[in-house]
Length: 208
Image (cartoon, rainbow, N blue to C red; front, side, top):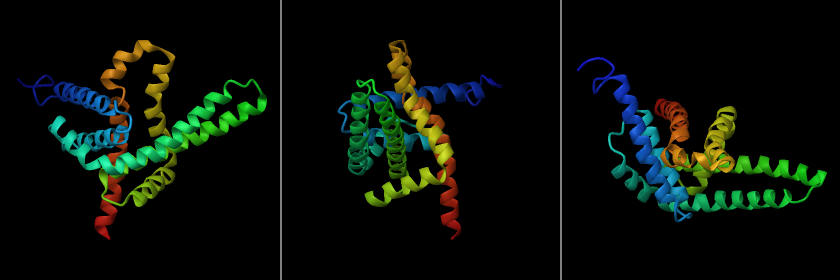
């Protein structure tokens, strides 16, 4: 069979990618259940997503768990730091919402900005850890550098990561969609960006 419906056609390619993303999303959800493993689950997901974006990955399950084992220690430490700060800020934002004062709203906005930045830095650190071999300190620093240097795209990537959770908070009708593509759907878009970003840095380092 030839054309767009052939195994090598565009439709088949899109359907295969969606199927891979669903499998990847379910794996990430399952591996996130213990909570303290969320960092490793996200790092592993992005490691696979970057390979999908580069059309390097043919399988999902085996490589995902291999990445999960390799990323576990460093990603868990990064998650404890970034996730801990994020949860603390989120709790403070929730408490301030109970006070109907003008100044409490100002503090809320300030804390929301810090919350967003913390999520952004943590996300970039986890993705950087999945792609580059480095110490935890340098991984966090490099993740922050990536996000600051490319701030506009970084804000977009972070917003895409947070958006499914905000939408789920607004309506539980999106739970089926969240279970299928809540992590990996936005993550795939972000993975295309990360793939291009890291390719540029890898090229620059190779030329030095």
